[in-house]
Image 1 (tube, rainbow, N blue to C red):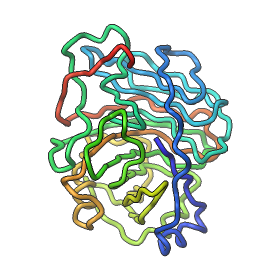
Image 2: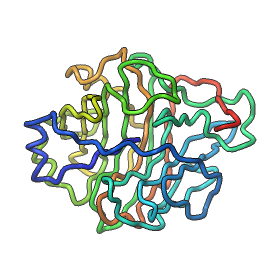
Image 3: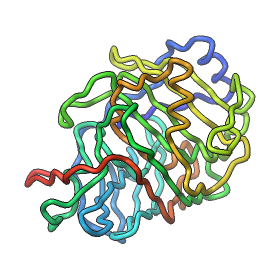
Length: 288
């Protein structure tokens, strides 16, 4: 997944006033899965997590070869165990479901996944996504600078999983915390209450390699390390009401992690859950 390098607080206002500014770094190369748990996994690796019965997600590491994560095998939890600043933008170790840069989590399950097992179905039309609900508990060191966030991606057309690169519809981020970035609140142009929580909203149009998409960040006015039973459709519904998302666009992936500039050692997630989307058959293949 392409990660934007977030602007420094002093530059956010300029980005809002000039939304055509490029905010994305170069696309990362496709990388291999590592079926190894509770040990350091470094570089551009991803680790499948089998939740039982064929239900699984993927945990992606960050961009830097010197950054490592340790991932639980049957529990959606991970920790950054080694941190090296990246050269290509802020790093985003995260849990993922869906299609990201030629990877499909329905194909990333560990060997031995039962035939006929089910997984969360992506891509799905934004207007036919069921009622997705999520809970998470995350933590970070006191010296971290970055955000702790959901990252939801949408493409205008349905594309084969192996061919989907940069999405061209919308990106909706939900920042439950943003240590070291409190000044960003001053650059939000509105506040809204979504799912019972007050959020400050930033929005602009981003572009990369000829692809344009609407970027929206919901920032919890009162930062927190956890949410429980939070519905995602109200966030999408607000974006639709503003013309930043269309129900016919395809929701390609749902991610949660920490987008980190500094102080990444010790960032982690102790639990994560996402449910309520349509279920589809797991599409395990020999090639992953």
